[in-house]
Image (tube, rainbow, N blue to C red; front, side, top):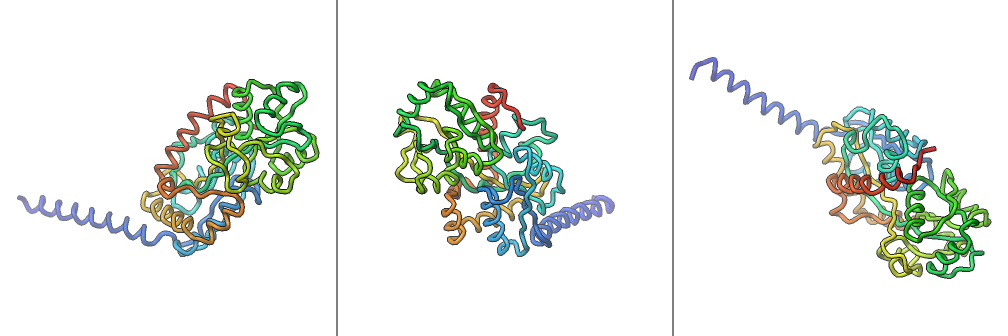
Length: 327
């Protein structure tokens, strides 16, 4: 072997070691400053609560402050787009749901790709939807409600607090062979107020929003859109039990980073999320707002990526067939 070749091999070997050491050092050093989690919705909503509770508990394993910034608008696509354009260094993240990070792609002309322009970090929580109605409706169960809608099809309106709710209301129409007017709202709070006052007849909303009103007796719950009952309203049957099997709908929350964020940084963020979600105090706080933490095996980047892709394949054709557009 020539001297030149031996020297080349030594340099190549030292370069490989140096590269590996740089990767290790980067993983050990991250983070060296505050991390921002962008919530693409207004403050106070379910996703915002999840983001803030999680940020508080991630500070300890990461050793840095974690702040939440609300960047709302266009179904969540404005905030999500900001993260898509951020530096892929792990310091700007997004907590979103299957409205902002799935359905917006069918409703808006996005300048980014929801699947390829992000690195999934972890799936976080889920919150089933529930069919609710104003108290003046004479129907006492879901079968009676469907029959009542058919008898009053020209006079029934249903409030929609977002695109995901609208999609599930369209599915409800098809499955029950009914017709009603879908009334869009900018949030669940004004829609529920109109439901309570009788301005609209029905809603398909998140359990976390509806449970307090059901318990207070201001609205009636008909069925949880899931295969199992909700701990928040255990007396309300599932759609399977109530006579509309398979009508499932839920909001789930996840966390993403910009495309190109190094794998070791993603791994460190995922570990911090897992540690936070295992904390008993955090679990109790989220349970109080009816957010169910997903099982540990669903908290991986791969699981979030698979669920996001599956939801896009399921929801986009429904939204496009119904000609739904973002406002």
